[in-house]
Image (cartoon, rainbow, N blue to C red; front, side, top):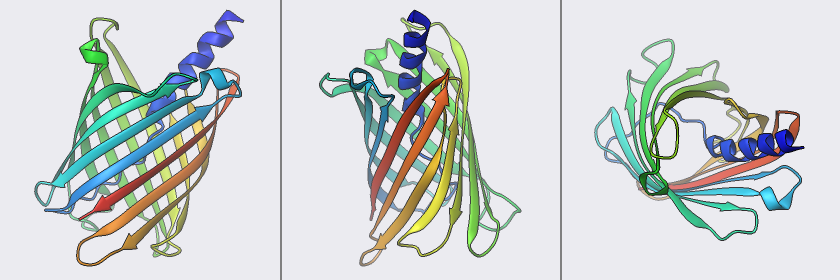
Length: 228
């Protein structure tokens, strides 16, 4: 019983990594406001976990984009708590369509629980236009954890998305996430609402089933991003 409870708690905490599939593309001068939500439920309401991210980003050059986030979490019946701060940079490595794969690097620094726990991440982003209708994206990310209350540790995670370009306002997809505590797969949808000028609203939603350590969990994620 104690081992099962520990596994369930680990799965809930690592649902934190079921967040988004990054794409490699950067638009110079583009500004964005973004909200992201991830919720996990494994059948026990006392262990429901919610993660909320609110961020601002900027396309600093034709290859570099920077983002900053505040992160809050809500566990079970507890109130929403400020959990972390994040700084993130994406570096687009090649022009879109110039190579067989479109590539980018991801760099992230996360400051958690007042500095008691910190994380530095480096990731590789790849996207391939399979046909006029289909595209595939993969993220491979390595994390180094350190701080007062955690043993220095390396971890890895992967995320993937297969998308069908039905219409820019609604594109169905399949997403998959993996790390040492979570394997999650499920359907997703992506859309863009174009406003006047450079302004547009991007949205994403996914409903995933996670199975690891003999525990089944339901994970829902969504995001809204205003670009201007």
